[in-house]
Picture 1: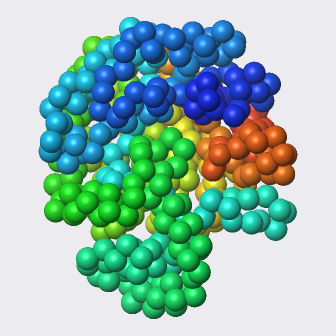
Picture 2 (picture 1 turned 60 degrees about the vertical axis):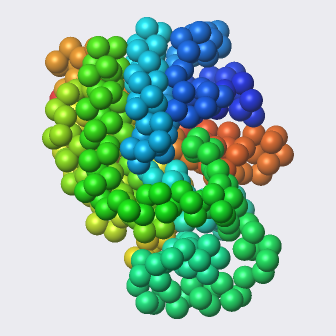
Length: 396
């Protein structure tokens, strides 16, 4: 597998030199300075690529070319923005950057309630706590209809949690949920998120899935012409937030997507942490079912609870079968080599990392994107990949 690393551009506290020293060879990056919905100029793409290659690395994956909420809701300026998206895909093809990750989550991108959950060893992890999220939705945001979105036991716990929260805790929880996380698509204040939620509340899952398919009907033919593959990221977490629709949370969702457009340009990002947060997830089966449409992989582990809560655990210590996932992905890579695929290696990155003391001391961290924490994760994953590959060679 191709070892890659998420890099947020020249302002990232983790340098390209540090990334190369960690052992990664591919970079996952985006042009975050371009407003969502606007076209990526070819000169900007080429400049980012030049910077990456000057450091001895390769720009392997774009994560992401964001999809504007107007496109997702099919309102406002969405037709112009779809045309801009096509321009971005064509320009990426000209620059020989061939894999694009994107998502179709409404209103909020990846969401956590705590960015500083203290682990027994003293490092810090990200956490999604259903009781806290419910408390925010029902008692702080006071979203109309929130009381119908959760089971009664969760609502009761949420009320007790809210009553015990200090003003500082309320402020921190709101900031974590709506202020935007690294790689996300913007931030809101309370009035802004209420307005955005209302915009999407009218759509059920099937209607919203139709919006995704209409978008893909427009852009996938352009991606094909440009030699680019698109890999949708699953919902994170993979269930409804704020009562809004979700269309990429399950194996069924992935099947509907790939069946709608059988083009090889229409693919999936296999995010183990996102798909795996569901109680009914079988990630090894999911990988095997959609192997030939997986163009990008996030390897992350979690420890989950029955109510939907989860903690981002160490990469090899959680509820996801990382070894089984790697085994299935290596089999797909072997199949691609046999078929003489032009892209036999699947880009993989260690997804999120704990914040360790050395990260805080060196100021090389942002939520989920520490240097030492991800380096540890990459080293552990590299060991798994090496071991599984060696065993396959010996038994071949």
